Image (cartoon, rainbow, N blue to C red):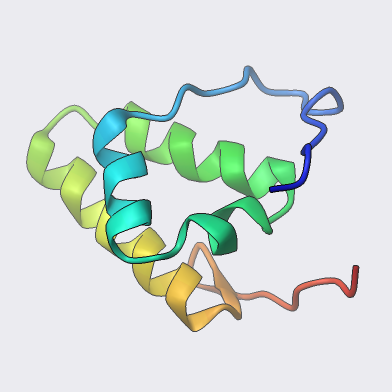
Length: 84
């Protein structure tokens, strides 16, 4: 994996919960997650971490997995990956 630079983020860097990492690995989406820009990676984790209820965390995780699998969606908005 590439060394993603998170130093330009204006928001605090979010920790990745174990259940998120497990789900990304189980669905073979960790590479898709790591290929997203740092702000998107951090926003996804922040969104999950802010949820109070487990059911909400799971719902958000499933949305993220669907978006990563699709590849052209970010937070229900169209997303066009940049050419690297």
